Image 1 (tube, rainbow, N blue to C red):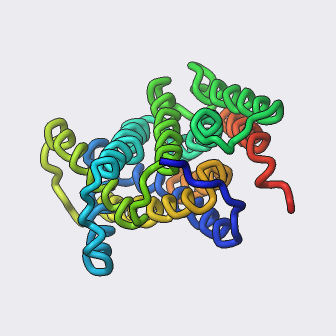
Image 2 (image 1 turned 180 degrees about the vertical axis):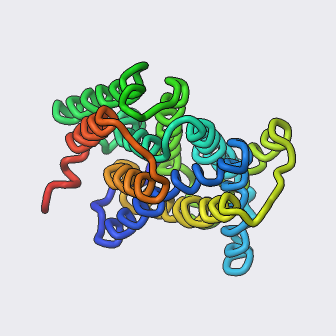
Image 3 (image 1 turned 120 degrees about the vertical axis):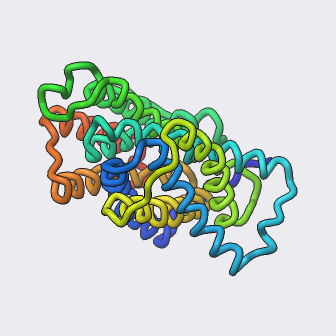
Length: 303
């Protein structure tokens, strides 16, 4: 299949980008609250399953004929992306959030444009990389080392083992690979495509959650409400808009959301959950976002 042509972002693309940054910024906080009662695989599977049910209900009412996907290539993309976009990164984040603050996870996710750039250069023909972008990639990886290395943040309040920190960055890498594959996927309607990915991710992860953590006891506590919020808004709605934005303006433009997501994650985590972050974590965030800025300068520069 010929890859979709890169087009300049429209004003509506910028509006979607800002909305996504706010919704995703609150996702880390909601997952942290859900983990107060549920295990990490249950939180990940519950978030994916709730998002899948919400979108499937909409599709059944509005576009039921689109559910009849018989193309094996499309089904293959849906299954693969259900794992890369949902089952794997959500599991990594939920496991890591047992040890690191939600704000830390949001900052780590800010590294995704670095990975997207490298992957886009390899797999998207109209993406070019020059000295400025190479410098941005190097700077971004320096920020990741500051964020992850043992002892770099322990004494300054971030906490968590090195494995938990690496898991957060691994989730960012999963999203980056998914963004490239979405751009190259067959032209399935976005809502059906997103609902299919969520359903595939839930079917893969739910058995593992039941096997490892057993049947969850659902109560009316805030952890359940947090999981419902995470499933409907940062998962079902936001990932639908993510597919729309990638197909409209491309994966590199969509990755600009990583500028604002860490800011919302820090604000919501510190203000609503009372989390604390050390000076080194903020330094790492500044280095990562500076590197992202160098790689994305053509989108940030006024026309």
